[in-house]
Image (cartoon, rainbow, N blue to C red; front, side, top):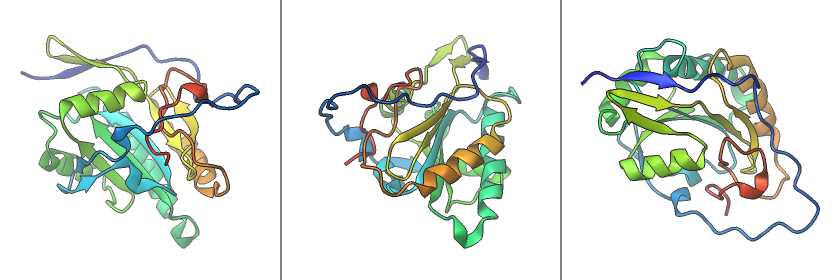
Length: 220
């Protein structure tokens, strides 16, 4: 059955920054097992989120069969354009990586993801496409504030592009599609320059802008 994409209406905000934590001691957080779970990339290699500690990380969710140019293909084009600009930095900025995670794992095998990635002239040193078991992908999407629901051959989903800094803190959530490449480049440069913040939560529910509710997927 052919798939199409149906998406939530675009929100008006270009991005959401976490608010400052209220005064007082932060509650203790438990390490989320998804941090070390081995997903599979487009090369058939095992990849965990913890592999990217110390790097600026951008994460988005998509599926390769999306036929709507301004939806999933636009998200991939954002990463394509942003990666080209970041790669032009040469040796001055190298600690960055993009993750495109499919929520259609039954169809999006590593071979399918590899063919899709090549359409966007991706560089596997800085951009990975991940798949895995449906339940693990679903949990990761939920923790990232992404809802993806099959509906009579459609996949209804909202948008989230998350920027995680090099100290594993949420820096920005873009809850829209559209041309975000310049904004992603700007945020990634700032995220990669972070060196002295304590490790904290990495992937938050995208609908929330408070760090207090952020799951510790990449933190120690």
